[in-house]
Amino acid sequence: MKKVSWSIKASKELNEVYDYWTLNNNSNIYSEKILDETFRMINLVRSQSYIGEESKIKRISRVLILENFSLFYRSMNDEIKVLSFFDNRLDPGNLKIN
Image 1 (cartoon, one colour):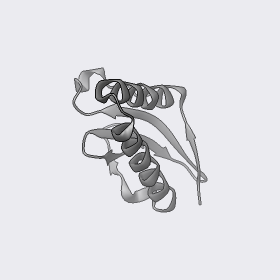
Image 2 (image 1 turned 90 degrees about the vertical axis):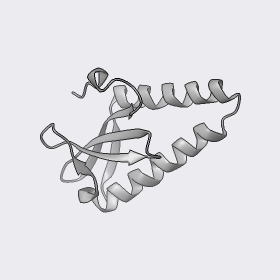
Image 3 (image 1 turned 30 degrees about the vertical axis):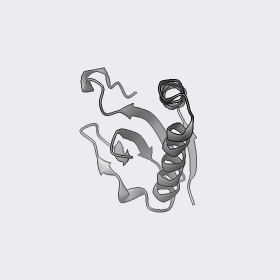
Image 4 (image 1 turned 180 degrees about the vertical axis):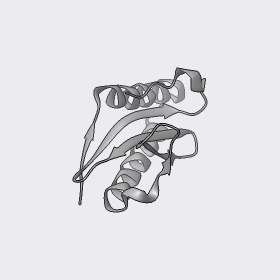
């Protein structure tokens, strides 16, 4: 199974989403649901890296998390590199993947 690494940007984005929903809901229940589903999907991608939809950016794929979030990643020979965790309700013009 491929190893998974997170870019600093993607890790920061996930943390910001977690913090926002914890604060917004006065509870971490939904935030934990986001995390659980994110890591469930990452494990699926680890074993079946072709499962994601190819994005408009070459060699970058995307999977949906709870319909509201997109996880962008690049699959390499022995690694999945998570590049961005994006809230789909935000302006897509703000999506930057390096």
